[in-house]
Length: 178
Image (cartoon, rainbow, N blue to C red; front, top):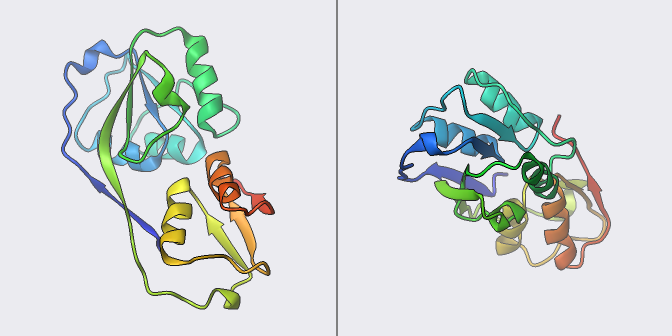
């Protein structure tokens, strides 16, 4: 039951060599950025977690830094500790995390996340719902007004948890996409 779709957008990175590092927070960013740009060996590659690291490895790149917790707050702290002057951050148009607060990080939109509107299904026929991103939480509530109390909520990432809590859902189980 897909709720979002990611598509490439036109983008241009002027003088990629000016960046000391590149941050990836999703496998979509890896895919859409690397389809158009090459990372030079001297650039440090920073990623948010194992799924993103695997996408980079599949393309032949090694990660320089990955926080223990796959979370943009932990990534923000780790990047701050590096004391780098200029970091590129390929992302989607929906990204609104702590990395945007860093003056040495330059976000560039390389893909678009669109909400899908699949036909409604009878939610009560399911034992649980898995949310893999804040975007899937938002897309879900574009279709449904509420989640029945009997349904377990499984959530990947602290921002997804926070998005559900803003809607009054406190009892969520955090999962790892290992």
